[in-house]
Amino acid sequence: MKKLKVAIFLAYGGESHVYWANQIKKNSRHDIDIFTLPPRYWKWRMQGSGGYFAELINSYPAESYDLFICTSMTNVNSFKGFLNKDQRDVPIYLYFHENQFSYPVSSMDPDKETERYEHYQFIQIQSALVSDRIYFNSEFNKKTFFLGAKKLIHRLPDKKAFLNRLFSLDVGVWPLHVDVNEYRFSKKENGLPIFIWNHRWEYDKNPKEFFDILRELKKSKKFQLIVCGKQTENKVFERAKIEFSDEIIHWGYCNSRENYLNLLSMATHSIVTSNHDFFGLSALECILSGIKTFFPDRLCYPEHFSKDIFEIISFENKNHLLSKMNECYPITDVYFQIKNKFSSFNEIPLH
Image (cartoon, rainbow, N blue to C red):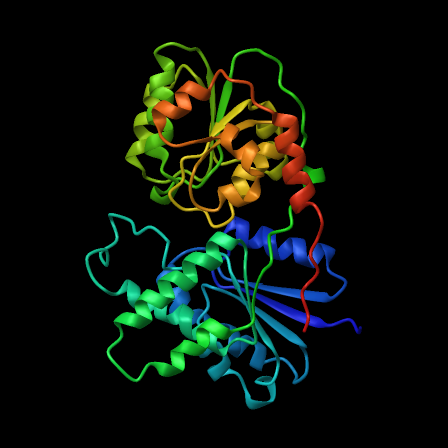
């Protein structure tokens, strides 16, 4: 099979999206170019990134690429429409890092009480319909997309039979490849627990529950705290920085990947409280660093582990978690499940 020239378009170049693309570029036998837009203005990215990327490609000679890979933050219909005629026969893969049907809406979003979110959901349906192949990063992502799409299509008034083709498309799950050798796994000494937050400082990661649990623990236990992530105006974090001032050993964004990995190697415990995760890279980074990580019994997390292991490391609510904190945690078994599952690179699936 010949070596292909592939273009990957990151309409919303967040850290996990960039990591995914870089892992493909690093490990694929094909020749990969990555085109990235900054991770801001997500609604405009869904509207305008397709035309922007198409104009970039139009400036290249015809037959420069054998395959285009767009992410779910791109309007593929718009991308394809803006391409020059001599570029439109290039196959397009669509990769879902997320889907708008199960992405929690911020209470600060002016569109929260409107039906405008259906517009962005419909963009993703249209993008899927005009793509040659579709991939999701997890079964949870795939399941929630098709369930949400079915409900939305059912509500549409008429002339919608053409949309039913969505449910017979060529679809697969293409998990994120994780470079497990980058992390420093070790069993931690039985010293003072060090909790870590290594997620975005946003509502969908549910930081309020994380700090509420630590407040409860603080009543009876001593611990230290590492909080990573880009600092933004967030009252939950502002309050926590004051309340846990005696426990904090690091607060804020890491200025290098090496610094971040060092902090992961120091931490002993992590509590995932997210209301949104379609894959959960930052949580898996904790496992690969030997951190005892507890997961909520929802979202994508159950599919990453065997049933017996997940029963030990998952929780239903705050009280359930607190009752598990002193129980035996099989960190070595958990580590090897993640290592064995995500360490092998899955080459770009070609059909």
